[in-house]
Image 1 (tube, one colour):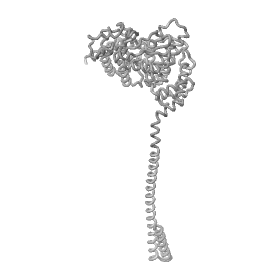
Image 2 (cartoon, helix red, strand yellow):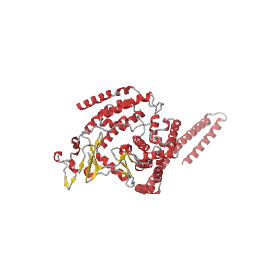
Image 3 (cartoon, one colour):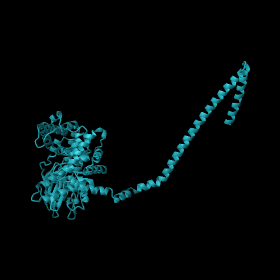
Image 4 (cartoon, one colour):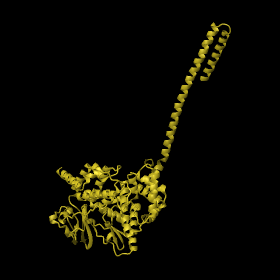
Length: 543
């Protein structure tokens, strides 16, 4: 309880320091005209607010840094000026000394020279550095979740990633506070009105849980390695399983340089790197459905014979339905078919046509198609988020995360090749996926997988047909019996009516025959005889 109160005080102090409470009473104007190269006064004011928010999140530590980074990947709900600034959030924090970080090795067990180190071994009796040939206790990278060290293991250069201690308690405390401050967060960050803050915080909690367990990252790397086993130009680190657990990850040290440090290579070589990066990423998205969710320039290492991806703490998964709709969207843009793009976008957002101005929306889509087909050297991947923000459409979180990742990929490729156009590289991938989707082998494989189910249906078909026939027959019999009862009822009523009518004639005729004068007795006798005759006819018919 006292820890939570102290944390509340810290948060309110930082919010006050950066004047964030003023954002509660101000609106972020998302729709205004200005020149990006010569910002107007409104740009400057909004940028100052965004900068203050970024600084506050950095000062509040791991949970808030991750929160800002996740929000920077949702340009469909967060104002553009905030997305840009939150994208600059630095995950670099002051490093902890190795003596504090060694806590991660508690319970660590591995085989060394044929001897087993027990999980119960105390740190005082077990020097973790003895596992390695060399170990530099100065970290080469420091982030809010973990620190990375360089070492040598069995003569190989390795990277050792270690989670920072006592993170779970701090993050759980911050998450509880964030849950209390939901309305305040929505106002301060200027989130769209369709944004479900409760669902977002739940997903955020799940993401942090996955990132805190380094065994998840190890599995991600292995899955990525399997997907690119046949691609010579794309590399991932090898995982040393026997030396890794949920708090420690030992892997190959990937040699090379980052994109921003690349120098002394020809423009053709840079274009080659851009081509490998874009095509490998499009493969991840449209073929594998499993992609690196944070492909900023520091997480892509350029090597002499290709590229290497590192840091797989954040990955994205796309289900078949979303992947199909996204591919149709890309195909529609490639073929410049506005209706295909429109229908695909509607399926992705889950919005009905009646809820938007279709004519204006299609005009904006046509503009996007034109830009992606005829522009070069310009970033295009955030067009859909801008469109969603304009029409107040909430994109699926998977789509928004992917779009943010594509923005990073596009920025990396543009830095390598100023004339880069993502759609040009996407065309062969689109054709490959479409050929695979409609190939005879794919259809045969689908029938194989579903064969047992269809066989069971065929086996049960005769009985099913028989059941349907019996049901129809029973229904018809029931209807016939019901109709027969109705006919009998109407016949009885008709007979009673006729007998009543004849009885009336018989009685009247008898009266006229006995008491009448003139012609009435004669008419009475004739009526009486006629009534008797008709009675006889009706009796014979009914018999």
